[in-house]
Image 1: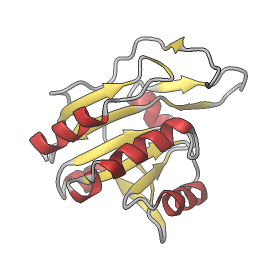
Image 2: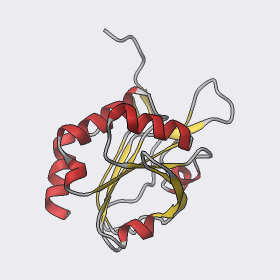
Image 3: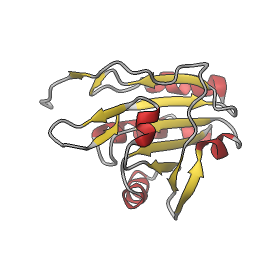
Image 4: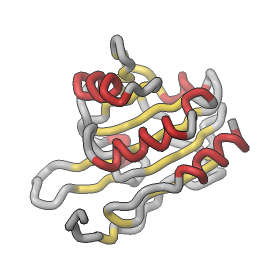
Length: 169
């Protein structure tokens, strides 16, 4: 049994269904290269499942990407992650997870702040990561589904995500 304390996270004013998701531009990493891309460029191509997670290699990141794989979500919708990890870490994480997805690199957690899902790390002055969160946004960046962790650790229901994708993608 894993021994850790469950911690309640502060309330969040994150985007809710019906809200327009904030646009942002960050390095977008795939298994070969990365380049600056805006979220709006991705939504111009269709709906996007946006997964925010702590740094690559953490259990919450692994859980989210395993859920995506287990439900074949990358075959149904553009699936994109966001974390504080560097492009080099993202490239290694994608290879390790064999994920058919892309990851935005947000090392300063500015996107987490914009979405109000930042999680300052205890005992690590100046280090903030993304709390686990899932947003399904349509072609207009309108949020169709939202889930944000309210405690640490907390994980979304993968079946709920899959149902939202089936309904809105």
